[in-house]
Amino acid sequence: MTDTAAPVAAQEPPPGEASAPRRPALSPSRASDFKVCPLLYRFRAIDRLPETPSAAQVRGIVVHAVLEELFGLPAAERVPERAHQLVAPAWRRVCAERPELAELFQAGDDASVAEWLASAGELLDGYYGLEDPRLVHPEARELLVETELASGVLLRGYIDRLDAAPTGELRVVDYKSGAAPREFNEAKALFQMKFYAVALWRLRGVVPRQLRLMYLADRQSLTYTPDEAELARFERTLDAIWQAILRAGRTGDFRPNPSRLCDWCSHKERCPAFGGTPPDYPGWPEPDGEESVVDRAD
Image 1 (cartoon, rainbow, N blue to C red):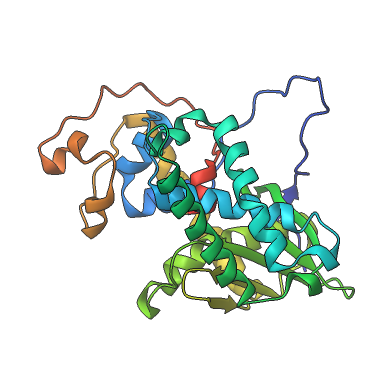
Image 2 (cartoon, rainbow, N blue to C red):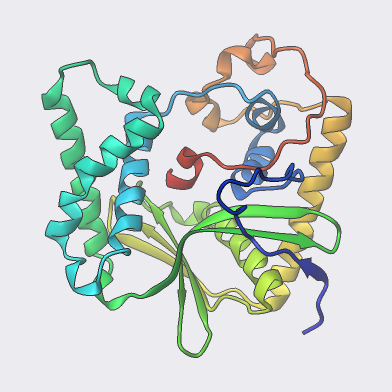
């Protein structure tokens, strides 16, 4: 295999040391935003307008936190009862880290909180319907990957779980708290996973053997086996997306792309396609490509 990229190790700065300014990067969520609607990309990556996550999205954050912690336990302890015990503490940690999320519920409404936490437990039951975590030994959880493509595009993203076989084969696993997509939406669902596959291929020189999306709500999995030629084509797609973002960033011409997804957009009132007015363009600030916890849990 011929190397066409310069790998960049994904490392966090040592404790107590300030991190150097990070180069602008492309994440799977922001790349998907731009494909769906360039103006949505601008609102999220450049204007950084606040968005209020739904109860379902926050539940996804809690479930991801539980699954991450579950795989930190000895294999024999990764039983359903233990996972359920981790739900309430995970919710408390999420609230401590992001106090605004606690505002989903009125103060003292313990019954609603209990019902909502129980629904998180149901998603964990869905996970156990897909695999037995006692038989899985991940190499990494919530793994930050960064790599620079030959074109200069810096990719950055977080992988929910990376499994490695003794033979060196890799499996990328991502948990989804919703239901599996219909067949015509599978390509969109796999966009994120191919992004991770490209990053790992360029970092390690190994094409992941399997990409697996686990949909906890309906206990279904979507699995895919990429090949090197396909990832090379996808790499060119990512480069084209980034170049289009840079062109729009220089001019401020981030156009709306109305679709059925607009009904779920937090910024519809600011969109000119619906009679709104976006805020003044602040100029290209070189967004850092970070994904929020909502992006990674949704």
